[in-house]
Image (cartoon, rainbow, N blue to C red; front, top):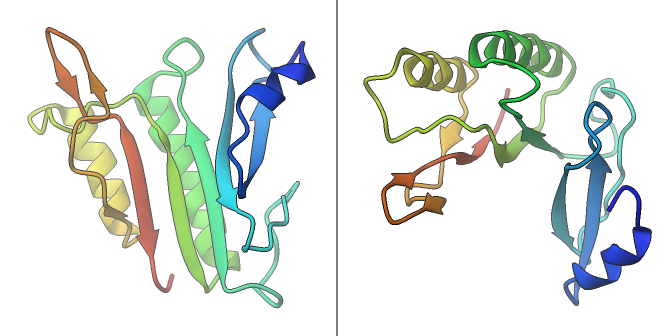
Length: 149
């Protein structure tokens, strides 16, 4: 979509608005979300102050295995969530593809990631496989929220 904005017409869903951002580091890839048109959407360039005009903050996150390793990425996510918690007191919804197989609960990365979610009172809502092949089923996408930070 980065090099051909006409592709957006092929990924539109009636009744929804697409909010996305292209990846800057690589030539391909982007992250986005479809938001129902009844919701007022304001895309933020930077983290807002206290939530004066809104009760919820929605973030979409993608972790590319080619750009950043799991441990470094979890460190950065922890820093980001700390900043959000210090500035936001409304509902927080985080969604995305973290490329961490949450079904592998013996993996130390999975433990570290789920501990991070719990420390910010975020809850994993998706429980079924999000990537299925003939050889495996993986839970890679999260949808987490907290009612009050």
